[in-house]
Length: 387
Length: 149
Image (cartoon, rainbow over the protein chains, first blue to last red):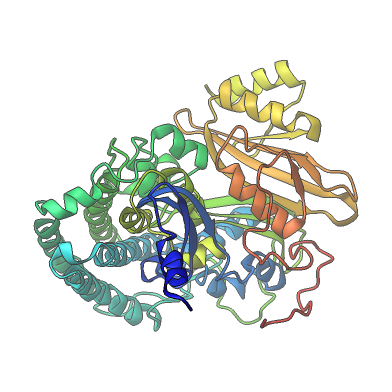
């Protein structure tokens, strides 16, 4: 090729005003799952986002229609595998609501204990991975991550002692819980939450006064009050946007009415506000766990006999929507029964799905580097987004 | 705004008796779907869009449901509409709620309900070349598909 021609090719350059389409994902480390964003950039600024989801889709709703009420709870935990306890709870609550099945008080307390421990574990994973995403500015990147995973392990150990499983538990069943606490478990749980409570101070000491952390999170990814409602985000996102909406308080399910806790609200709506909300939630969850352990009533753990056959639970014709406050927000199950051993229709309302839907509205205007910080603050779990 | 107030206003405006189902359940003809959502948002204060989905009642057609909330009251309104047998078209709510965008895309993907007026109605969870709509009752669980391309 003559030299002039080669030069021509090189000099067709970037003038700064062109729009560039950039693909981010699906295997991007910051997505903690499989998620693709097609970013339209002007320079380094994002002007549009097309979010592509569905890579982890297993059609849980169809699965729910093909499995009986006894079989499905252990599958329900696979929707949100980072907070499996709450996903199971949403499903069994829906079945109990439609079938009008009572749950003994001891089981209600056990459900609260595991749900709150699960929130602690889930928030540990969120904080660690989020700080790692934001990288070197936070003391080498992996520092906070490793500390948080260390604490999460302790909670998973408690779950393992309780259920035999570390991630997908099958702890809940229609009418109560499947397992009772093993001897000495409550003492270990108390020790665990004591340790975690002390470690939370360490995280805050590392992050709160860290100028880099503040710059990367304050004023970034602002969700307004109006936008939060219009999209339907829930959990720490909506509480970070000035709306004190928490299902544990708004419509106390299980035994949440018995406990004393605070629902944190921040008004800024940015990543930092969501961080503050979750840090308070950590401590409130610990408070609830302690109260529930103190007041754990004696009695049966299930109002139904143990599982002997798959078609054991019969649900009369009807429909209902039950929801719980998961670590990421409102996790709900809409259930339609035609009187058979399997649901006629099962709809999952995944908190992560609705929360992630806010991304295309808040990312434009930010730099590419902020996309990662914003996504981490939303804390999506793609098993729950794609279901 | 209590549930009783809301119920009375719905009766005045739409001539429909809301059913108490934990919140208020309202069954509408699909022509008044968007009108009702606008009324719920602006006059009942239901600015929170919770979810939208459908149920396939086989030869009785699809039922589309949408759950809206007023978080301050608190008030929950579940809108329902029956699309006639063999009919799968419903007005969109994307002009009123931003959350309707993804929810309607999911409903289209799973049931094949076409939301008229949706600006970007394409599949969301399944791939673009997927055939059929899995949550329809006539879609068999073991429908074959080509796993790799």
